[in-house]
Image: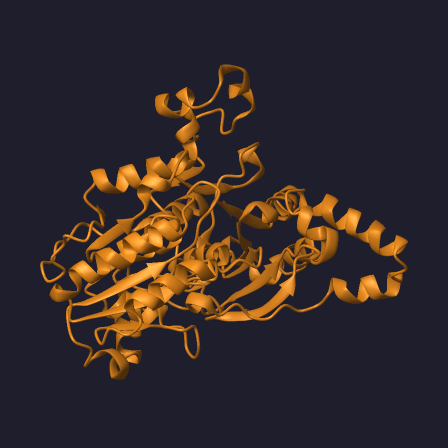
Length: 427
């Protein structure tokens, strides 16, 4: 009988990698990922950021959980997605919509997300369907191995937890942002520390005793909950270097120091209006002498009355450039080339991205925030990561801090959890 010649096992110090036959079976390798999003760039950016940090950025598909739009649906956004869709279906049937029309919308493709580079590396964008995803995980398991599922946002909780329940042997499910209840529905939960503010003595004081049993979370995080300082994102030193090169022609000759100002918009827990806009405009005029140039960007949530004040007070100043939202999004270029940042306190995502650069970050309007967001800003200040923006700063004087590395730290925890299950990433 002819002897079968197997390939020689590689040297332990070899950098070329180990063939699958010597490491373990194909079923132990995680080679691909899917992202379950809710249509909001900030949430989807967190999921894609984690996938990118895990080395799977070019092998993932985005599924979106979508809600019905228009008419009465704008008043039903607080409902669970499944119940919202059922009510919408009934309303449409009563109003004379045909079932054929409804079915034709079920598989409708949604445009690729593009804000902050979210679309980079996506293979496709599809509407989330639990049965299809579960079937995909099961049917491809023998050939492709386990499926990594990363979801973010309240509307994705039901979909992600159903995948975990129906395909627990074929998928590893990560939920970003606290799902509030029954955290064991997921293999891992990644959430900011300030989501546990209700358990702190300060948080308890703000909740009447008869409501405390209704406020979640009720229990401290267990071993499968990963706590971060801020939001996950796609910014790290590698991406900053790459972006800096691609935006070189636009920013290399901008007078320095360059101060980048990112303006969000009021939220339920961080309310402000024209008063903060006037304060920001006055403070920026005060620091202009120490700036080479200032670049200002608004978000989709910025009220028109806020942007109007900024444009009126600063738009004609030769040192100031206000991006009008036209053309390529300069957000990544600003992160790479800025010498310092001013960010409004309402956006955890924008602050987290800026704090990942290690450059000075000034926050405006933290005094307008309440509940768990006060804890977020307090933690950043105590660690020396941010400072309040008062208008008395000398922007030419730089200061630094250890950059936030939440995304890389979370990716490391995913690696460890997969290893505990006998799985590993195959990048």
